[in-house]
Length: 244
Image 1 (tube, rainbow, N blue to C red):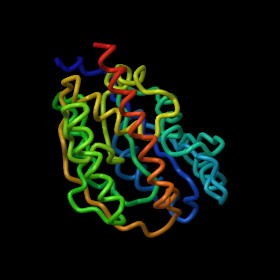
Image 2: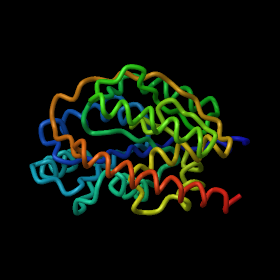
Image 3: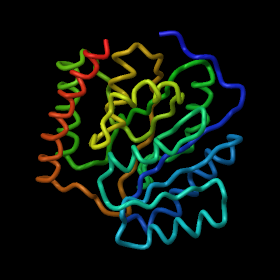
Image 4: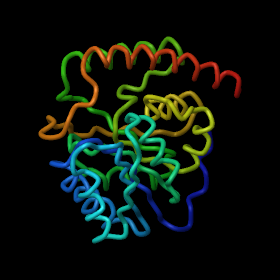
């Protein structure tokens, strides 16, 4: 697929879902501010507070009051996927970036991502070669990779990585196929990009152990989450086939 023409004005929206991250959220926002916002003109950080029960929302409001580039969105708890979609719908810039609020992926490698997408790529997606996640999550990641190969004939190494930079055009094309209750919209975006022939570059990112915050999906809930996610993948495949 031919890449779209570069927009004349450099602009970037960063989307960060957050849930019960009071101990990490200020550092996570500062990481985005230092490595991304301070480097890119006309950039913003949209943080979606997904019904946190701690001081996450309060801290975000304080940070936003001190920096107009930070835009909190507060919503009832609905899960990571719907929170991410809420942030994506609020984006108004020509480029979009997905990050998490747990500080597991540092953003000091952002300049490499930005330089790559300026070469004409539609997206730059991170790859966690070494991951500090529970063994069960790593096993499920391998299962997902096999499922994508069987269902979509694509095999991105780390499709659901929470570190993606892409053109707004890509999201505009993908979003009509992604329902509002999708559990893993970042994963679906990667599938869409690969299956539709968009020009995607992959770059290694560092992954650190989680130091603070709350893991929102435990083992048995994660199994139910994956079962529902698999059904959503089947529906997504039908949507893509119908779209042609």
